[in-house]
Length: 235
Image (tube, rainbow, N blue to C red; front, side):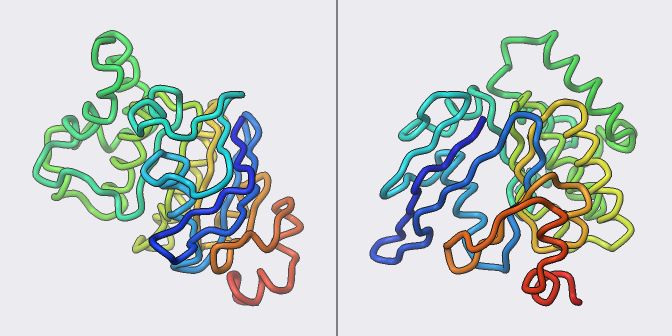
């Protein structure tokens, strides 16, 4: 479904990503583990078309998407929920969600169906749909951010650090919801520092350090890896 082949990215003379080779199959939930600054967000921004690779190729659903504009990539079926949520805090929850479906704005019936599905997935957002997004709790704002990305009807959902700043109980609920989104047919690439929670729901994973993928394997393989346990799980 998604393939990154020898992808490198530079910021000026600084090489942020070094020959990244990564793939995700249709229906999978794959986690990208790594510390702050390791390169997770750079990978996401490159897949989304916000950054262009200096070398390498990106393929999605059998097509090369290198050089495509971000809106074309969204239309093709990739939506990103960015780190830090990036909501329009003064706008209502409903307006934030409708903006998420902007690429499909001409399909009024489809937008209505997606809103219905979103409110079934996140019932609390229906109750708060007319409230300003900024008035919600951190966990509820993260729900809005994920729901807004889902409004684009993605085949592949990119989730960048969805657990940051959330209480442990909220994190647990959030990951249960992400697993449900995946079970409902949306492929997910999840960037996370919370390895313990992410590996509970992921099929496979990659570990990135200093812009390089240094380990990959099944969730059980990564959970049992001594380096991963020491650095990310606390064992």
